[in-house]
Length: 242
Ligand code: 5RP
Image (cartoon, rainbow, N blue to C red):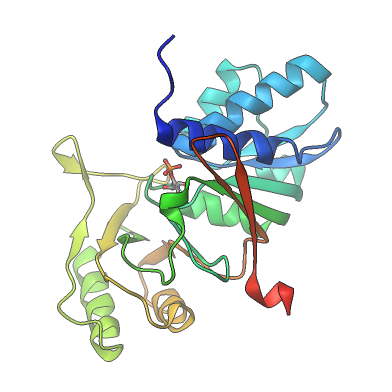
């Protein structure tokens, strides 16, 4: 088998460290994305090796399918009710462990699952760690109905926040508008930087037609950042250290 790329080795290191946090009997949320794929594989290995009894909910159809292929039984979140721990990837992680998520278009279910968890642990390679959120596009899931009106509302909000003239594109895949697991569209906002993520999150939450945005603020308690050499750095919120 070919050697893993440095990026894959870093993701796998973070995934292993995250799966080491799992204890028998836990109710788990399983994230989405390429780093989460490593995590689901490592989790399946532990389940096979140790016979862990877990109850798992998935943040996307893709994760549900992968888990099923690896013998991990996935239940509806409502059947489990509440989760002990969610393990998920991120597109950006700032020093307060605020996140941008939704690069894979799954941030609606990801946020519902993370918000229904006692603890959210994020896994990533070092490229995801930033000083300020916003270089990665901010995904905003919107209803197809009235998408143009929703776009105008968001544009006005950005103008009011001195974030005007920023591109806002309907996400495409295979030559057509990308549809989320819920059948909605995604507007990707190229903001360059987000000086006040909390104000932007509040503004987006108030726009009719916005289903969910990719700002995950004050939701993550720990980030595990893997390196290609297999080492892992633990990041905790700066406010938790004071
Ligand atoms: C999907 C997500 C992913 O967790 C995020 O995009 C990170 O993905 P990857 O691990 O592939 O970089 O939010 O909606």
